Length: 225
Image 1: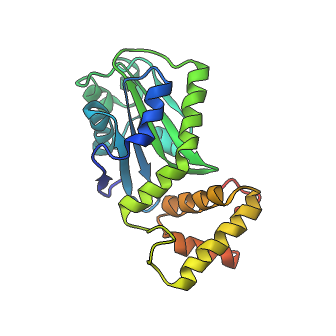
Image 2 (image 1 turned 30 degrees about the horizontal axis):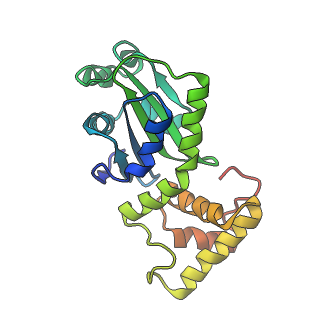
């Protein structure tokens, strides 16, 4: 993306921490991207993870970008050789870091790709199928919180119960949440998280998307939004 990255220095560590607890990795970093070009780094567990995130943003290449564009996990079990094949510039820069393996996992809500968590190990290693499934499950579990934090850091939206926006717009957000709840047969919490995720990914405010949901312009029914 060509817009500046907004960074929360070592940010919301709670979003990164589950990956460290559940997987044989050394560090993690989470970045979310919007269609508008906004990019927000939510957390990095350490300076190496932070630099790994910065490098990919600065160079415009790397597994983070591939995972974000395809919606599939990208695994680099041996950074010394595998990274050079697809991303030569990134691979050369990666050689200067204490990184042996890199794994980029998309953060998704339905078909909306919110961003990517990039994990690294100081030595070459592979993730087993079970470990990869665990990483995907954690990424899915934090998606709602990631969307909310990204909106806050990007300054796009305040929480609904804050005194921002007109009463009518806040009412539409609640109405839209109820509509999505019915369309997806889910809970209010999940429905609102999906609304937030869609808004951030499209570079719009929650109120604007809620208005379109209430008007029937956007529907979450029979789609993977």
